[in-house]
Length: 326
Image (cartoon, rainbow, N blue to C red; front, side, top):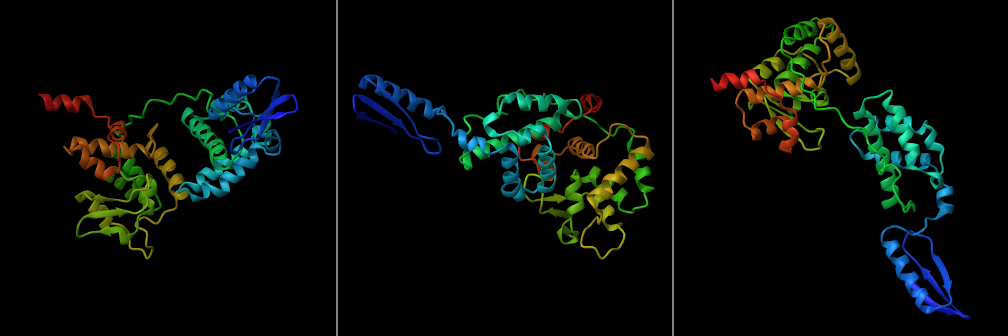
């Protein structure tokens, strides 16, 4: 609110907004004072009041990143990965910059440098993360930034969704996986193709979650945070029943890093190019549709809550559709 009062032969105006420093100005004429007050209140509503420069000079980008890491990131399921990203940012030149000296050009330069080393999708994720750090600081920590310096910069365009199918690679891939020293690698690959489960979901499943009588596997922790129950095909049931006996409560007792290294060896041994493990999920979802399952049925298995996201995984073969049209 604006306060206008007579001080000697002048009119003094004071404008206050929560989380912003008080600003004031004196005028000879009352009409000018009121006009300026209305203008300042309008700008205040648009977050246009001057920032608290003392506060901004005393804080650096690193201070915000550390606070975000310790209060926000720790509550996320992807805490480990996000902490790694934030720690990398703490070593960037912009981390030591006081908030009073922030400019969008700092982050556009960071974007351009990272694009020379990383995929556009990776850079977009990093920019989205640091942008959220600033947004939380503005909205929840009363840091008086007039604007988010990352919001205005151009973000890298993402690549088209992958449409990699196994085609003729499956036999070589499964053969290479079966020759791994770890007896669980081949079952993981086969289950990924048969169920469409993500790597983390497969490695996190426990025997308590498997219901062999009802042919289901319940996933307690998923990417979107919504537990789901995956129906198991006859092939998937056979894979589970054929697993080596173990005292481990996990269905597939393999660490994430161990499987990551094993997957690289499998690809190299099979001579398969440009195949991500996540592509096996794409393959599974396409096969569900090719078997005649409906969108709700496939969504039940895959866990997609938005059909538009599900369609991004769907890359049916034109020749298969043509065969149906004969």
